[in-house]
Length: 192
Ligand code: GLN
Image 1 (tube, rainbow, N blue to C red):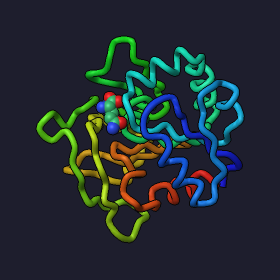
Image 2 (cartoon, rainbow, N blue to C red):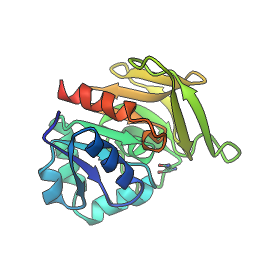
Image 3 (cartoon, rainbow, N blue to C red):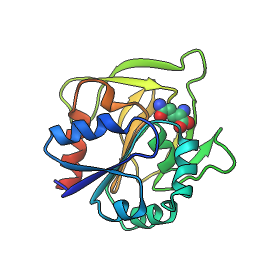
Image 4 (cartoon, helix red, strand yellow):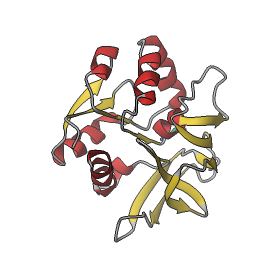
């Protein structure tokens, strides 16, 4: 298990991630500064609003330090907006929105469209022996998956949970299902 797991706490759904990780025995800190970022051994980038988180990363002088840590292989879990931020290509983003390019995915923001803005689905996840009830909220659609990316779960043939190297991303909110298996699986993956 990594010594300290940071949860990026600039905006969005960070608190529940921290609570789940603490319950699983991980020491967690909320990350709002470059100093805090430098002190963590793994990081969660939560759901929220990717354009806002991108802007706040820039304003808090964390964008370049985060890129550097990702380049060095910082283990990271990005959920929903976090997936968007970590992707290599973003469609329907803002022009000034940064793609961290930590995982070779092309995503479309809010790609499921207005009518099915938010939905829930029981998904089969590689490595879990029973389906996970996944909550999607204005979720990104994964349009392209790079060769080095392993798809761990799909909805209607579209990837919704992926991993590559030290990066894991989910289009849904695994913290909202009263089920810690995605977090547990992530900690196992990065600790091993
Ligand atoms: N649509 C949001 C974005 O663009 C993501 C929504 C979410 O994180 N629940 O960042």
